[in-house]
Length: 187
Image (cartoon, rainbow, N blue to C red; front, side):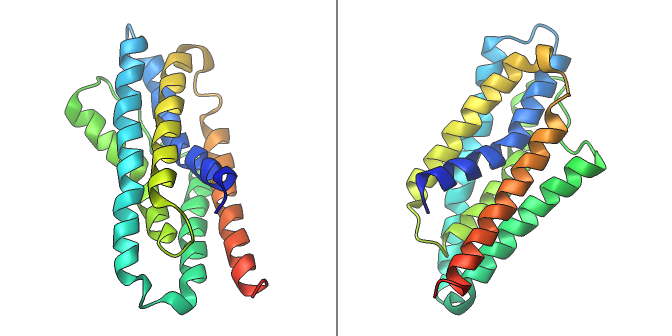
């Protein structure tokens, strides 16, 4: 997997955290740089850790399903991407902004916005990828987008939230299709 593909996956995974950060910037009175950095650390940290945990889980079963690993990777990425696309079109508002930035609330939001990263980590166990580099890129991108989202929240409003989630879902589905095509058509 190329660094460009890893970056695209990272951006796609970080869009939920971005949306929550934008909403936080709008809804929390006095939101500032300190708040944005706090969001970035929580979301970036979880987005870094979850792919590693997923990769460990996937690696433990990879030898048993090697013959269909490309289907597993495609299925997971398509499922995650499809869920993101569906959520953006339905407008279910799954990612709510916190009313405050308590550790408990941030932990719950960080878990909720990084479950997809866990599943991507599982799929990485079936791909030739440097999981530590991938997790680092995913974490750094989530940190950066969370900080930017929080700071831009008062200006952007909720305007871009649905479009970002739709784009992220389509990117993940596209990467899943590419993996499937490489393994089924390429040999």
